[in-house]
Amino acid sequence: MAKKNLPYDEKYYDREVETMPRPELEKLQLERLKDELVWSYENSAYYKRTWDEAGISPHIDSLEDLQKFPFINKQTERDCQGVGSFFGELCCVPEDDVVYMATSSGSTGVPTMSPFSQHDFDEFMHAEARLFWQTGMRPNDRYLHGMNFALYVGGPCVIGAQELGALGIWVGAVPSDRLLWAMKHYQPTHFWSSPSYAWLLGQKAIEKGYDPKKDFANLRTIIISGEPGGSIETTRKAIEDIWGASVYDFFGLSDIYGACAGMCEYKDGLHIIEDQILVEVVDPVTHEVLPDGEKGELVYTTLTKRSRPMIRFATGDIGWVNRETCQCGRTHARIHISGRKDEMFIVSAVNVFPSDIEHVVRKDKGLTGEYRIRAYDENHTTKYEVSDEPFDAISKRVENALKTHTGVRPARVIVFDTDKLGASGEHKVKRFIDERTSTAEAQEVLHAAEEHAKHE
Ligand SMILES: [Zn+2]
View 1 (cartoon, rainbow, N blue to C red):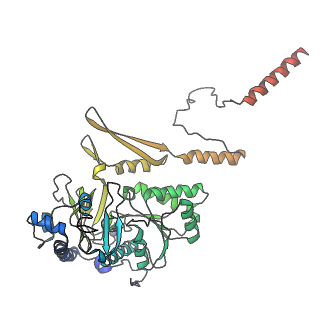
View 2 (cartoon, rainbow, N blue to C red):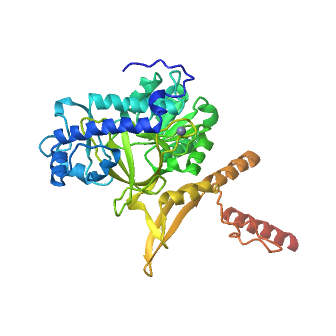
View 3 (cartoon, helix red, strand yellow):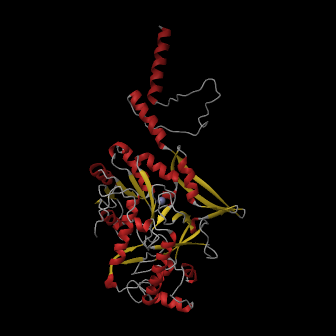
């Protein structure tokens, strides 16, 4: 792992590749795709069998020729693993050449194994280094890696930060107290987490008495991944407001790399490393390839992976692609992910994703940002309802003000919806409800004393 020694003000980690004009980039993709298809055909029992059956030759002349090839998906991986060898029929190298494996989370079924040869692992780390550099990470930065290391493809990404020369702080998935302690003492400049955890950790920090903007003053970049929230501007903003840091969304797949795509400073989609991954958008029903800008299922083909090439891997993610040159100068496509195919629901002919609803809920300052969506059928029509919760900080703020002003903290401050206290419009409002037993006794004593005085 050779350090590149780039000047800190160099904008690109790999200038030549990242800003390559599209015709050249597509030429490079075609060369690599040709190799990858022949390699897959010659070394994977699965690809050879299915392409032979479909009468498809692995030799192609153009990128469009890829459209003839069948799709694979998670189920293909599950069906192939363990067949014939440990890594199974999709794998193109003997197990001896595999140096690392990750697994999928298994959230949609049996976990799938993802093998990497040394070549694949090195390419993976170059990709991570490039995406980190794109967020502004430099060799004088401290990167706190709070990702799980156990079988999770996000774990080794810390080595990508080290490749560019940054200080890698391998904290891993630890309880929030420990993580906050590490953040306070090691003062990282960069930190990577899921969107919901970045938000929750900020809330925990405040609860524990930290002032995130002061106590973690060095922190200027938070990378988030793993949930659609990272692409939702209001969610990023909510996290940025807590930490006073800039939030960048990353996207990865256990099947390919921990991060395959990431935001640049313009944050208009995620640049996918197109010299290593080819992206197509297909109609989720007809499987026809859609033009750029149209929403459909994202399909990836690896161009350099040797251990387990993924040829037309249909992800189940719905999104769209923009291949215009970005304001940052990079020519690599930007992907926009709306959500999962299986989470989309249709209401009155409109496609709705949970991420659309999250956008609205996170925008409302009076809500905590937590929500539940229930899609249900009524009278043969799909409807949806949303549950959310008012922001506890309002009651906390009043509670603290009361403690400061009176010297004692109330047991509880309850925040009602507007007009729910039923007081407006009345002339004389009973605002003090006294249920103290001690008061009742005191009143009796007072009353008895008065009666006694009258008879004196
Ligand atoms: Zn850009």
